[in-house]
Structure formats: C-alpha cells, structure tokens
Image 1 (tube, rainbow, N blue to C red):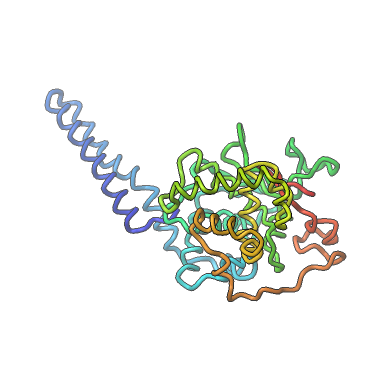
Image 2: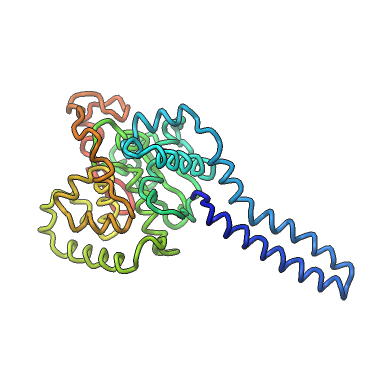
Length: 333
C-alpha cells in the first residue's frame, strides 16, 4: 500500500524496461516503414502510465495529515495509540493512501471524516505488519445506517441481523459495514468485537487464495494454521476457550473472529488460546499483546442501560452488547 524505496526502484526499473522495449520495437518498425515511427511516442506514455500509481501514492503519503483525521485516530483507535512515533506516521500514511484510492459511500446515512477514518483503520490494522500489501479487488466500502438483511435492506427490523458483509459474486470488491457497529468496534471499552477488522480479515484470506500472502508469511506457518483450524473445528469442546461460538461456523469465520480477538483483546487470546495467538502472530507478522501492554488495561465500560457507545440512541443492552459474527458476514446474536 505504501511505496518503499525498494518498491519505487523496482517500479522505475520496470517502467524503463517496458519503455525501452516499446522504443526498440517502434524504431525497428519505423526503419522498414517510416510512418510507424509514431510508435516511438508510446514509450514515454507507457513510462508515465506505469509510474502513475507509484508516484501518486508517494505524493498522497507526503501530504500533511488532516488534524481532524489524526484526532479520530487518537481518540478512537487503540491500536494506533500503542504505536511509537515512527509507526504512527506510517499508519497515517496508509490511511491517506487507502482513502485516496477506496471510495467510502454512505447508503441512506451520512459518512463523515470519522467514519471514513475508522473504515480505513479497520482495513489497515490486519495488514500493518506487511511491507507490501494490496487489497487488489477492493473498490468500495458501503456504510449502512444499521443492520441489514440478505437482500441488503435495513428497513425490515425482523430480518435485519447482518452487521457486515464481504461481497462475493456481483458484489466482489465491495465491503458493507453497519455504521453503529463500526463505531462500537472502536469504542472506549476494549474488546474483541470489531466489524471492520472482521470483514477486512475476510479480504486478507481472499487475497491469500487469489494471489498469495506476502513473503513475510512462511508457507509452513500457513500449513500449521490450516492444521490447527481443522483440529479445532473437529472438536467442539474446544469452544470452552472463551472464543465466540460463531468462530466455529467454518474455517473462514474462525479466521475472521480470531483476528478480532487477536487485535481487539490480544491478552485474552494469548491467555486462553496461546497456540492460536502464536500462529496469528506469525501470520500477521504482528504482536499486538506486546504492542498494547503499556496501555491502560481497564477502562470504564458501558452499563447495560446506558446509551450505546455506537451512537444509535438505544440502550447498550439492546444494541451492540450482543453483537457476534457470522460466515462472510457479521450478525447479531
């Protein structure tokens, strides 16, 4: 997502090579047929096209970070607050690039800077440990005013139990998030439930299937994870580890739900399922338990009858307190 000096050099070499090939082909063709010398003009055009995204990302990352966006990160994103100054700068640059390239659209609801920054944070947290990561198929994030049903309707309360969805089929490349649930996932009370991290973890898994994981993740670790998940899903008694039952729906939900625990409540996961924590640490190339150890571990939690921190206006016990996750989507319990 960010352009490192190595990525910039590789992109420049690739652009120069392609441009040189075009120039050689154009010159050869023009030698035999002078009108075809016009092909030479395509060489600098090809160079600019191949360099365009790389140069734009460097420009975007180098812009001053909006103070309002920074305030959102400092106020609501615990993961960001645990970083040192250098890695905070990298996180902000990734937010800038993400929001420059990915459209965040409100569906019958207002999407302000806070929502856009939290969407970006949910996308960046799972991949922050990778030097060169791309959500290749992601084009847009839709933010709904609340839970929705399988027909993407939020005006039918009886069937609206989905809080997040990673698009497949005709919606491939689209992520749908419930606005109240997104806000609740970045509330003051630390916890594992985070619909943004959950859905983008699904995208990480899809990227692994489509294009493979970054070189930081050894294939042996992936094989160990697959074996671990198979053993866990074949022995339901292992649910006693304190992980949400929804994790045991299938292997995809197991990965997404444990990713929420890994980043939202790393100390809990490390204590209750140390093998899972260690594998996720190797998969994500991150150690959030060590990262957040210096932060306060206890914060005031919302009481059941208090207003829900997601801003819905409902009591906490009637809104986000009972949220849980489901297959390729996030559901209400």
